[in-house]
Length: 158
Length: 131
Image 1 (cartoon, each protein chain N blue to C red):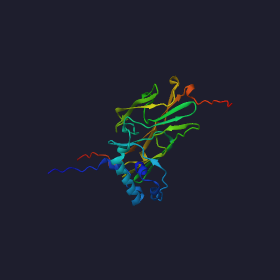
Image 2: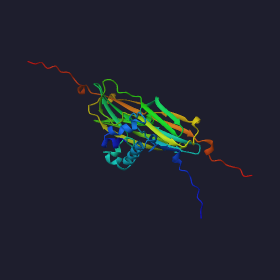
Image 3: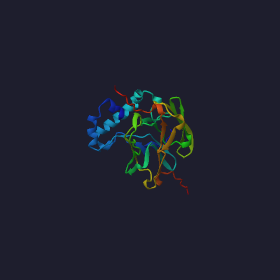
Image 4: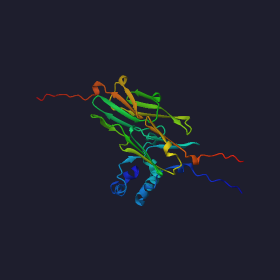
């Protein structure tokens, strides 16, 4: 017979607070239900799983415009500025790069690559694109071409 | 929560929750827990959160992180497409007090929060000399 020492699973030291929810059994049940539901069926409702935010290789993107520029904001937390590539080819803006991951001992492990292409609805002055990275969010400013800007045309009514 | 809410209206569900906490809508950030001999490491992705929008609280048995987005849509910008949630980040983890709460170090850099939770002395493996 062998006596194997029982090891407390390390995860119990810091565990997500599922089902606890302030000792209210109704809330606890709802949270637990949500968790099971998301675990089992969450993927089914994601149209393009490779583009879903928070997956390796995918990240969330927002698109804005004002009268002079189109803006793309991408959530890229924890990426070195020099590891981010922004490219504009035809109507597609491609944001790619790699994120360094760190193990428990603080040593670098294998970097994770990410890439995404976004169609830009307006034609862009490709040579004047600017990008800024702050708080883990990349903002790309794409100046619109003159002919793409909204114009006010007065029409004379005869 | 989000998926469940899209299928079943959240209106009739929020009441039981608001009785406990006036819960603002919040999303759970992506996080990772690591462990080595000396400490637990917690890495939380909080894109768009600046230092002054971050709250880290350690209670008895509970560690809470709340991150508020620093960025607001400037005047004149029109939203064409959006994937990022508007809600703030909120993460609550239960713990069993096995780390030294006075020596916790947290660093927020480029939207990633790294928390080092040094293990309590009592928990570390000790070598005992046999006389």
